[in-house]
Image (cartoon, rainbow, N blue to C red; front, side, top):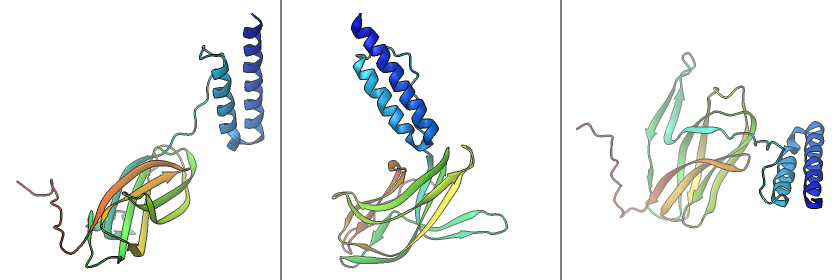
Length: 195
C-alpha cells in the first residue's frame, strides 16, 4: 500500500516537472519524456495515469539522387536531374571526383530541423564529407527539395559508400553508391531498359 502511494507521488512529481520544463522552454520536452520513462520503470511497467508525449516526428525522405548536374527552370520551378549515376569509376586511388550534385526531397516535417547530408565509407563508417544546415517545414504537406553541389570530393579507395541524411541527429534516409577502379566492370543497372 505504501509503495503504491509512493509511485503515485512520483507520477505526480514527474508530470509537474514535465509541465514546468515545457512552459520554460519547448526544447526541454525531451527532459520530460526521460523523466516519464524513468518513472514508468519504477512503476514496474504498470499502466500509468500520465499520458506519454511523443517526440517531434522526423521528415520522410521522398528521394535521394546523385547526378552530374541539376537544372531548375525558374518559370515552372521544375527540377531536371542530369546524368544520374550510382557508380564512380576512378583511374587510381586516392581519387578526386571533380563535381557531383546530391538532390534530396523531404516531406512530412513539423517545424525546424538541423539537417545534415554526408558521405560515408560503408566498410569503415568513415566520414568523407558533410554539410549541415537548417530546414523549416511550413506544414507536414510541404515538400522541401535540397540541391547540394560537391566539388573535389576525395575517395581514398574503391568500395561501397553512402549518402546519409540526418535530421536532428537521427538518420532518416540513405543512398548507396560505389567507387570502382579502372579494372572493375561497371555494374549492370536493371529496370531502365525497355523490353
